[in-house]
Length: 88
Image (cartoon, rainbow, N blue to C red; front, top):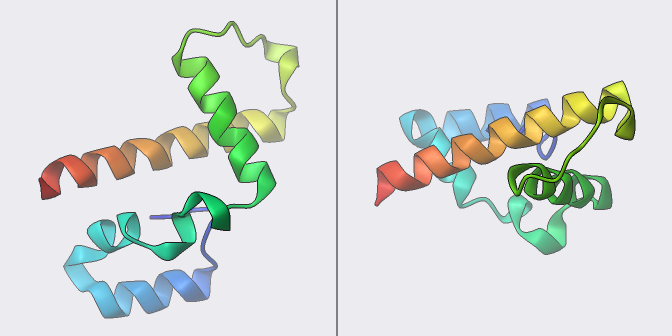
């Protein structure tokens, strides 16, 4: 699900509306369109892409909070990729 993008209330509403298709519905959500993302989320996505491309991020390059957020973004991206590949 869109951790960091949706509020707990949003997640409950989507869970009730989408049922077992929640992961698929999440990938189609308007909130994850680039123009709707918070600048910090865009920063985390860019850092994720740099890391995936092999950029040498060192321990002190990010704060502890940023490292944890980066991991969440990476898990979120993996979930989106998995649910998209299952729907094709």
